[in-house]
Amino acid sequence: MKVIKGKMRAPESKALYYLNALQRFTEKNAYVSFDELADKDNLVKYVYLGIKWFSYAAEMEPEAYTGDYLEEEHRLIESILDAIGMITPAQLTQMFPPEKRFDGKKKAYKDYFSTMEALSKLEPDKPIGDDRTVFDTLWDYQNWDVNLFMVACMANLNRIRQLNGEPDLMDELFQEQRVDSYTLHEKEGYLQNNRTGEVFKLPKPKTRIPRNLKVHS
Image 1 (cartoon, one colour):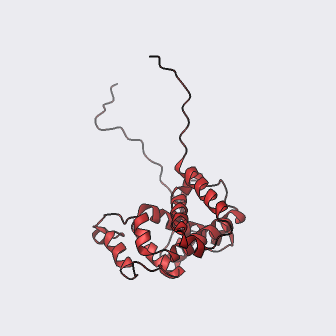
Image 2 (cartoon, helix red, strand yellow; image 1 turned 60 degrees about the horizontal axis):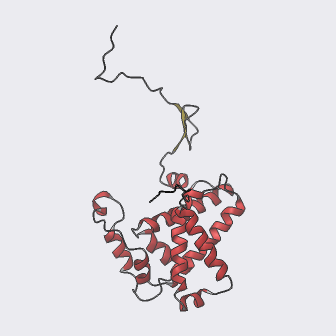
């Protein structure tokens, strides 16, 4: 037997895989309503591909976020949220099982119990409901793909606000709570208070010799 060396095909990134799959699906069903998709269980496919795409989308972020890009991204997010509202909690948990983490209360983060509490407010075999119900449910839902989708939702909203000259969501929250936030200017070597504009110089790191090394003359 003789081994022949050949060129290996470069593995396709997960982001590109789900983007292409989502594009094929939307092109195929461009003139189909959500009700028609639901009849054929294709609505579940749309939700799955949409959430999976956004969970990997950071791998393909553009160099600059233009208004047109953000508006198109926002329309896609709204479409996916509308589709989620039409599927049932049982379908959601089948696609994206809640993560089996049980110490959220102790460590102050969402876990399996917070997910089950959110789902207990819904009927398992009826559509999740309106946008507010969808958002509240996903906010307390502990699944990595769903979490990354929610991060993408908030990031999109925040970038649109910034393009429109509105304050950063986190800065606005800090202002409401009367908590100062700071911007790090690493190259210039200073911190700036976003509320007062006050500047604090960063101390230069000191070079230290490890204790296990000795300097010989």
